[in-house]
Image (cartoon, rainbow, N blue to C red; front, side, top):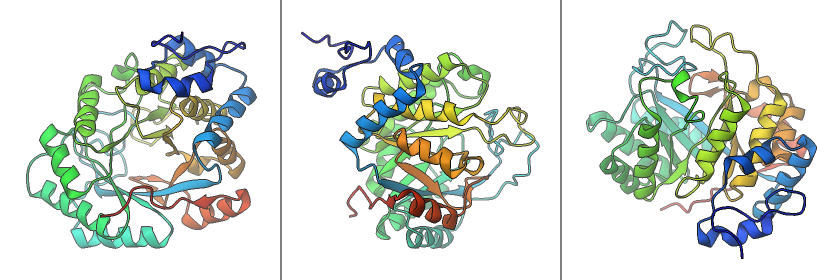
Length: 344
């Protein structure tokens, strides 16, 4: 009889994925040891296994294209060591007020015309406040939905009531990353706790909004920390529907400005392991693509990534141009995924 605490293990010592799929109904969980065995397996074996699982659950030639717009930039009171929007760091990012509704909707139309099916709006807030600015964000969500796009927000911490208001406005997804493992988190952020993040995720889930939650590679964390973050994600009461894997973009003026570039094989290991642990999720190849070659990105797609962020910026950090991505899609035989969530 299969254990309810972990997936069955095959003859090679790795979890048996047929048994894994069958156990979803009985609240299966992954241990750190199992995740470590996957993460540290020979990288070509890991890519092959992840690609096999990816093909079972998704069309491997279909990639969701998302656009992320900073609707309120800079001036954030948090101290996230990687973030150029933190007010306490001397970076080139200037604080801007919340954008006008019409300007956001114009950007959403441009995103739709460029092939995006999900439009994400980010505000550099510690937490959402019940005021006219939140009312304007709710109008942005309604407008994005009216354009036939999936709507996603990342606004900081949320209460349960605020999450329900976003749901009522039509929000499809809410992004709130864990960033790293519980053990390493305090080395990166001190102005909010890991439990604060988990609480917001639960408010989002309880409101019926899909969860977008992942982390960042290259913060100075160890492999064990990367495994710890994946362990937390895979063992949430319901795993995230979307898992962004970001490579640190080191920004001058932040405490992590001198961190070295993330090796592509580290990204591949994270993406492949995430795909194996969360086979139904959209695994998003997120920040850091500007420093990756087409071949690097192809490895990530082989490892199970099936979403990218398009456009020249991810909030405030540079990103490949839309025409570069179009050429890459043509070279690799990829196509843009249609909107997965019905509009209306």
